[in-house]
Length: 154
Image 1 (tube, rainbow, N blue to C red):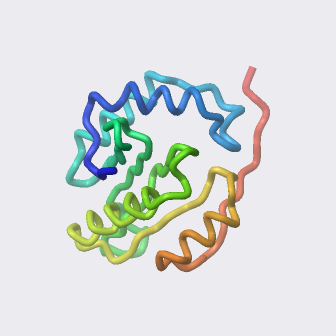
Image 2: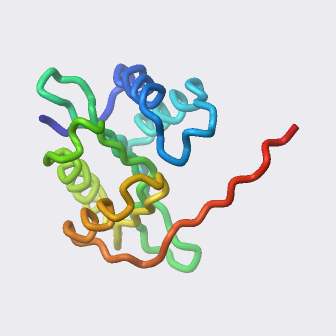
Image 3: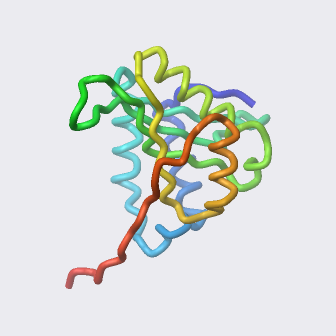
């Protein structure tokens, strides 16, 4: 298993994973492959301020992905690293891949002099397990995420 920066060639495989696996509470939203692909391409091309890591399995197939960016709080000029996307194929969630992806993100953030890592958990999946995982690797709970579904516009 290796962690590396994503390439343009990874985008179709990542899109297939997204299409094939129900995405927790986001399952009610239609998947827009063109938007997904454009976003992944932007993340790959904006490597200074953004990152897109993939984790390859033994067959050199991406089966985990983490995207992040350098951002700023509205009150400070100190950079912080903010998680955008973090997904590990269900068949690999019990191994070390999840930790290694997060450690790659941490190293990337440290190299950019970020003051902290900011991770939001918005999937609605395995919230307790995710909480234990994040605390185990050094995160502190600072609040929560809330969502309110709205009626689809006509």
